[in-house]
Image (tube, rainbow, N blue to C red; front, side):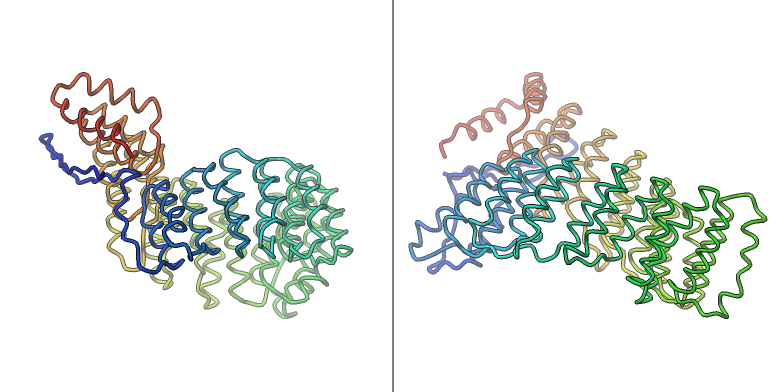
Length: 530
């Protein structure tokens, strides 16, 4: 049986929005005469309740005896269940996929491993990876890297090393360099750069070629640990191994060592190495190198000033290309050195190069970290427009987060309305979540409810936490009908409300005699058989 009712609530207390509830056991599904995997994928994606989608998924085989799920169908169902927190059901579907022996992609397992880890089930993630030989999957590279990264983040370094030793030699893992980079990073994070250096030195024997990321991670670790001699030797090895190609992105690695030498009072050695960097690393023309007066580094006792002069020499001494400017700019903005990074942008423009999206993103992020919202918005609305660069939704979300943190959620909504009218900019689930949470934190529950409605229109299902916060807030301001509607929405999506949500509703409803009919209707819906 399908249970449905509509309602609207305006400022006078009347109903304002329309919601229709289909109970899990009362699906009005129009099955085709011949079911194909793409058709089934569309059917289950259209369901906002993951349990309804799962029921359709399971019924397909009984209704169509000749039909068989394929890899993409399983991947879709696993993703729906995992993203909604239905871990037990996700595990069952993964088991079905194994029994069916259908070909499946590595990304399916990588995604499931992430879901397990997010739910605090790290052992389940490890168990799934170890069971991969039982599946019809020929490439485990992404799953392996994902699990290794999780082990590093969880500080399970011993487990990570065992996983690497057990699985890095098989043909199922196609690339080992990224795995070793993760291990080197983990060791450096724990101030064991000496052990990280040993791993680096063993890479040749493992038939692995260190890449630029390897050098960047290890150089940072050695410098942080004060191992400047080893860091210097690492730089020299980089000259003939990586810098032979003459990429300007290497400038980030060079700067790490030169800054560390200055910080340890070795300005003379930094200048000597800078000369080698300009000649061998950046392939700077001889005529260009003559223009630098590095004696200023010694005459000024200010270490920061010496570092700035060295940075300018790096930028002006290289063969101009957009990669080096972008790499240097992103690195400086990431470290919060906005003034220096701006100089890189000016130099870049003078040489006729356009800043890339990553450098704009790094600049906006740096400005947001400093709570310089007006400047961040100017970068988006002026600098990026002049640079023919289209802002991503991630850049806008960074601005919204800061506005909401500063309790300026209404300003964030106004800005959101503005960008919503722009072509090429589509808000994502995170955008709506940021705005709703910001509005609720300021007690603007009615505005939050309106944004959440728009979120549903876009088929972005809100999290349990967002719904719970909004319902409790609506109860405190007397918007009981809306609170009840959102509770119904939670139930229709298969979410189980927390006890505090029920407490808020019961307390509010019991103090309001006008909603008796509503309570009766809603309770009957919950009691109705599936």
